[in-house]
Length: 595
Image 1 (cartoon, rainbow, N blue to C red):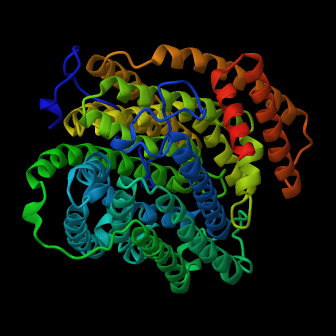
Image 2 (cartoon, one colour):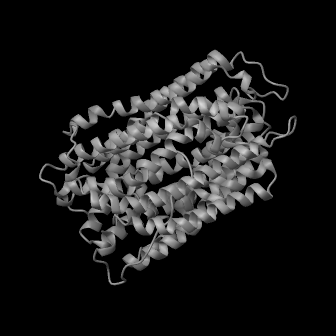
Image 3 (spheres, one colour):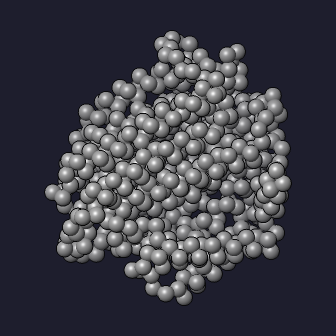
């Protein structure tokens, strides 16, 4: 496929960067024009190529949906953390929650990102029925594969728990996994049904429906807190649920069953959007009509790519669990999987609100440009997307670095999540601020390869990057004190993101020609300068702020006031430095207000 496709004069080359290590399936999104910034610029794709809606409008819709989805998703994390803490139960729940998502990525996730979504776009564009028959067949096949996979891995829950959890956790992780692994099938169905909608440029529902899932799990966490946490007795160190005998069958049923119920409801709520798009799924078993040879060829490389990433996920979960398992009784709190996961989810929230909103709207356009060999248009989309994402992500990074302590305490210090655990999460958050940009930009670049259905180079390039990442994990575990292992794991992620970003940029340039990165670099220099000034101002404000360790109101006030001040200084500095994206943003806001 991609290897035989006609190329620009620079000729074919190889590969991009690998996606993140852990957790949530990432849904795609978008902006990018050949001109800089956020402005209301006409989509360069003509209407006949699917450009009827402007990228800015699609990005705005998805940005708002993604913002609310990510905020409620993070609210879900905060509520669950407050209910169960970051000790034995918290780490066991987080570990069990990884399993269905990891296996979903192995079975379908990577295949969806790199193969299925582009195939949906092509079939919708080229097939006489708008791709409906293709979608019916593929959904039926996905249902069969995912159902079988969910059954097999649920039966194998004890083996998976033995591989991933520490001995003290294994029983809890196994029992939670029996309840949570069936969600694998529904994660996959949601992804494929979202592909049907995205290929028809119906981006709203896949962005908005996960809010329902988040609200269900928030309700689960609130009920758990009211029924179990509020009246629980802390141990000698002041922590809750640190011993297995403190955890009842009812607790596990509520946590595990409630989490899976949220995913099921999420899938059901896509039905109205599918009907509105004119799609009604019918089971079709004539799989021979699918381009199975192409799917198998591309999927083989993608599965290699995804499998390598899941090895990294297994490594990070195992090492984080081992670090917390090595904590001495009566010693300082040692961060484990829950602290790592919460800091990582902070990064994913920022990435999802900004970069995922850019990727999702761009992916159909980049796929069409690649399919028609309009290479300059593809690179224009990519460059514009990187500029837009960078402008919005840089101040978020500055806030994570400068205000990690008040943000960590304000967000996490609730209920069973004690001050020591919240401060440890804040320290991890400072590292997230450093690695956020290379992560998001590397993710934007990888989709330029996926738009060309080039999974081979993605898989081959990913192997040394993952090896590098896992090597960093092992060094962190071997060389750092237990309480700093989680920080070392995040640093290892960041270095691997930077390496993959630089290599993928070089390879894309060889393949597609100039990527417009000089303009990106100049813009990034200005926005980074503005963010650094804002971050220093906010940090100095935090140093002068009264102690808020024991005051929730003080923590919230510090995070809100200093964060607002940081944004205000950043905007002012961008205006002084004449950041192009700032002018485009003003134009967009004025146009919206006039409407």
